[in-house]
Length: 325
Ligand code: FO1
Image 1 (cartoon, rainbow, N blue to C red):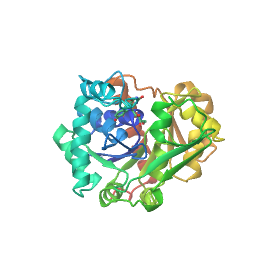
Image 2: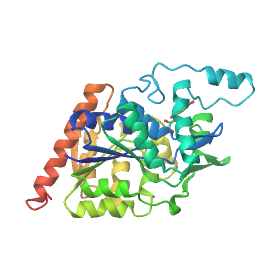
Image 3: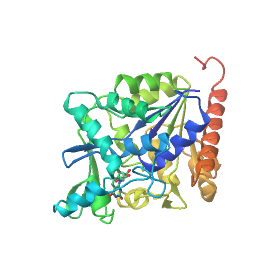
Image 4: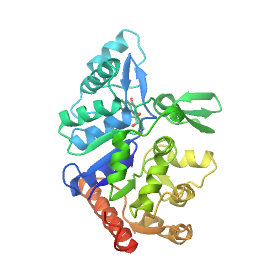
């Protein structure tokens, strides 16, 4: 089965890891948010791409969810001694990735090719693609003005209320051949339990991408989404508060409404804790799957992935014969 997963950072990487465990090498393609990217210390840093790559390579730092395991911080310590800002922590091994990537970007290579090269070097058996090759930068407006995403997320620890979000550069970005090819060949498309506004939002803002997903759906390809908000709380990060401050209900229903409004999904997967929301979600005209969705360890990631793959097959079966091409 060829599966495409749209993902942000830590939550997206967990579902991708579960899917990778269940699939044959090469069957999974992860299309990753690059709106969180930043330039720092003259390096291009792509946090969500790296989180997915490190997780699928089995070298992610398990406590943080981002960065590399077995890390040292000598470069950061030395930069701090020199009086540089070190609120965005880059480990020594992680810095090698940013050096590798930045050098190749300077030579004019595409972020897609660089990401595929990193995946190959790390032995990742899945395809990990940036959502676009052109730079897109998520910015958030708080009462103190517009902020770069990592300024808000890491430096200010997501404390300010978010009043508005924009994806700068998205209008000039394009769907790559690799992303189009993966969506064309997909048997199912899955939206990871990442923040619907600042992780999945930038991916859907790449002009033409929603149309590609819609075209896949029209061919009978199952499109599923998993809620990253459980019991009204984001499993990680500020998605619940962000949904509230932007006028959306901070719940699995709020997430389902957002994707249903785009006419994007066939089925929505919600946690057993949110079973009471199932009726309201079905009323949006989409199918529902209620299961344990919290992916604390490798076996729960595999279970969620298995449940989602089974749900995708049900959509395809219900679509009837002739859809299997
Ligand atoms: N998150 C933090 O909370 N503090 C950090 O210092 C930090 C550094 C960092 C470096 C590289 C990287 O790939 C990720 C890093 N993250 C850090 C995580 C990152 O801010 C978030 O995972 C995402 O951008 C949100 O998806």
